[in-house]
Length: 86
Length: 267
Image (cartoon, rainbow over all chains, first blue to last red; front, side, top):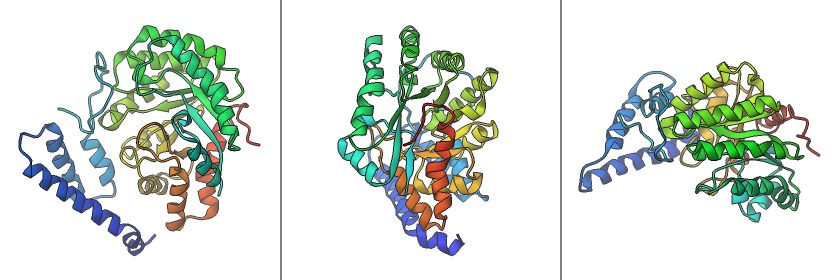
């Protein structure tokens, strides 16, 4: 696909997602209370969007990942939060 | 269009889903053992579940003209209780000769704990002893990178395991290269919210090629789309991929991997 074809196929979808992210951040700003670690992780990951190179998706995923190497002593929960708590 | 659904938790789906899949060109469905959404209280619960996967669900699928295959294990979400896991692993050999059993799966890790890793290695040992194919679940979201690395290391440490007989599922952009470079097959799970979208899955095909790679819906009791594979085929067509190439990705590739077990035979 040419860049023009990629834009034709995906621009509107990406535009909608971009506005959704902006609205999500505005919603957070309007809400009372303190945010947990996920907001900081989200904003940090967003910086990867402005980096050079072809692998921004990988960089965003790595930014949100647990990079430790040792197994946990015990699994105390089953679910994941979407961002690693430092 | 024809396609294989290599990963669908059909016991959680409706008869309408079976109808839609059959109408979309599904040639067969493969169902890994899964977490029920709650922890089972005893090995008897698993015995019943394995009967459901090897007897009752194939009969239900057959009513819609769909061959049904399955994989057996205790899911990593229930692996923290090692004693229960050992009891479940002990009953699996009773089911391995059932005609629709493809192998051991979906085993793997969830929160990357020591007990999960221990139970994972016991499943791998079971597969090696019985010469079974292996289907692996990698953890969700922030846990995926670490879990995939632990899984790959554990598999490499067991010299009995042939990478070409193992598929590591739910890869994303940050784990696919590790899996493929290690010689394993990689599965891309098409979810509307987590894992990967159709567009991202096609991107990964464009980047990493069409070998040792399949796509699945992993439809279950959560937010998931049983027709995710044919929808992705449609998107591949929009992006200019040929009918032959699409057929390779959604039919021939899963056929090639699954045909490594003599039990997998399409009519």
